[in-house]
Length: 91
Image 1: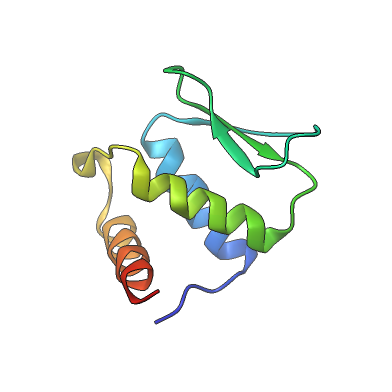
Image 2: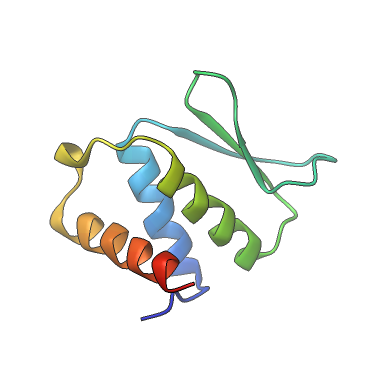
């Protein structure tokens, strides 16, 4: 099942990151990437002017790269992450 590029999907990604104690900030700037993690401070900065598709792609790639504590996730979030990983494997 492919990932959908909707506001709801973005909210799911934001929810998982919030539960992992990451601070998500939408800022304007001249950086080309849509997201970056600042050192060890667990802050993710997203370019405010990026498209919805770009924001979802960057956050999903970050979720696959960062270490996650699955004990704090609920069942829906775990299923969402599993779907995200399966979709990435298909690509």
